[in-house]
Amino acid sequence: MIGSPLAGASATVDEARSPRRRRVLVKVGGATLEDSAQRQALAEDLAAIGDEVDLVVVHGGGPQASALGQRLGIEPVFRAGRRVTDLATLEVVALALVGGVGSELLAALLAAGVRAVSTPVASGRLLRAQRRPKRVVAGEAEPIDFGEVADPGAVDGRLCEALWAGGFVPVLSSLCVDDGGARLNLNADSAARALALGLSVDDVIAVADVPGVFGELGRTETHRAALTPSEARAMIASGAVKGGMIAKLEELVALVEGGVDACWIVGAAEQRPITRALRGEPGLRTRIGMRAEAP
Ligand SMILES: Nc1ncnc2c1ncn2[C@@H]1O[C@H](COP(=O)(O)OP(=O)(O)OP(=O)(O)O)[C@@H](O)[C@H]1O
Ligand SMILES: [Mg+2]
Image 1 (spheres, protein in one colour):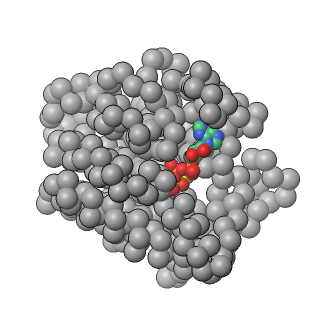
Image 2 (cartoon, protein in one colour):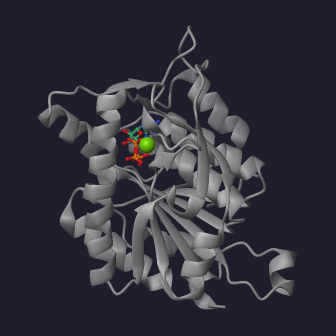
């Protein structure tokens, strides 16, 4: 175990009895990986914990997929902060996530000394998925058909366990494959939620281009240091939270209600945001937990 670096992190009774290492899932948003200097800083922050915990990284790539689509004449469409994915958009998402962001993050992590292995979350049937039926979502009157989009299914953790046993760090894009072999897009926050529950992860950190949730985006004084699930839901219902933050909060609330002690949304531009959150050091971030307590 790693003593000081994670002294502020939660510990369970089960863990005290079992020899298994602390499992940490870090979800990294696409926007935070666009700038190469910031990408490298995040990779170095991840390197600081990579030897000490069983680390799994899930990355998004929303802005990169939108930018590549626009270069190809395909405009992005969103409903309730989630991308609508027709077949052409799926092609773009696969190229942008696996070929683009995944390989860039892989390069940054390798340069930082992390033995990273970059692959879609479908690899080795780590995360199974089905096509999402039409569904009712917050803020939309009619059920929405999201197209070539996945609902996450069962997790078979053996790929991660084999990589961890060999001293490697899985770095996962959220591209899914259903049982019939069709590729499907999945919001990276949804992939992170499914994996965190399926792998019984101890700590979940979502790195975003904002240092957490604001009552009003752009007004620093409205920053929320801590949110309970009911407070998070109220912020979605009131319209204070918009875009991709809706999906993120929904998934983090599901994690906390699913038994994860607490999750954090941290800002990529902060100093070493991942290790500071895990150590419980002061910093601008939002903690989502059942109890309203200091981050
Ligand atoms: N009230 C709010 N507080 C904080 N962020 C908000 C709020 N309302 C909307 N947002 C937006 O949510 C965005 C984060 O979600 P977004 O889906 O864009 O990023 P991500 O999930 O980190 O990345 P990716 O989708 O690539 O995985 C922020 O950039 C911010 O503009
Ligand atoms: Mg998002």
